[in-house]
Image (cartoon, rainbow, N blue to C red; front, side, top):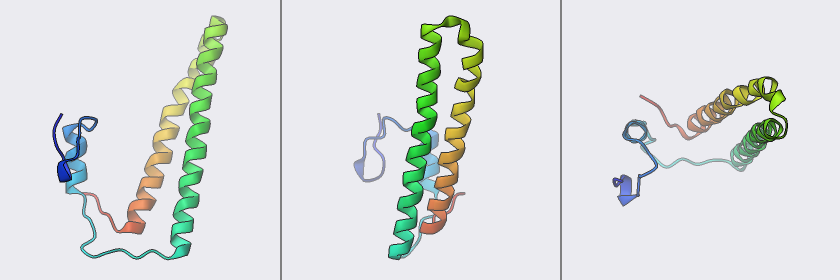
Length: 107
């Protein structure tokens, strides 16, 4: 466990993750968002949560089906393996849009 910015406990973040966070280019001045921009971000975040919950539900359902009927393992394995890349893609897309709106740059 190590301390991050403002003495935060960073035990869940790897040193590489912290390096990325610390090297992001943050805006030099305060950011002002319009009500419409906040509504848009909220809508996008709501969609992200909904979609990821759906992806996770498929993972749970496939695992339960395998548990109940091991003969379905091969068929359900495809479903299981398709979900993580979808989740990653959704999170990356939202992150990119979020960073763009807030003026955050990556190295």
